[in-house]
Length: 116
Image (cartoon, rainbow, N blue to C red):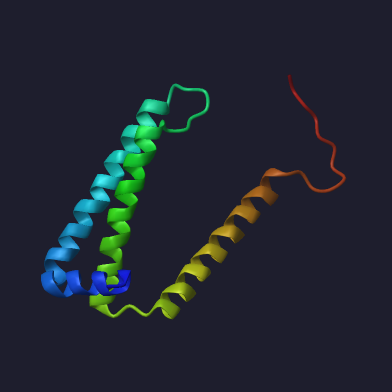
């Protein structure tokens, strides 16, 4: 079986309601893993989770992706439409970042006075 066939087989077996609840549980587990890793690294210099935390986070991301794939299949979400929405949201966020960066930089030719 391909990955897609496995996703569909499992989704068809359980159905929408149990799998949507499972998705919520998996998202919560990812949230907990990220939060634990963040708390552990808060006082470190590099702010990067250790290998155990990274592996746990990877496992939880995989679980969430599996469940999202099942929900998308069960709801008939079209990948083309989803990709269009994702691109639109990414473009919108990039524009927000650009505007924020522009506001934080002085206009070209302006004098910058440092206080230190």
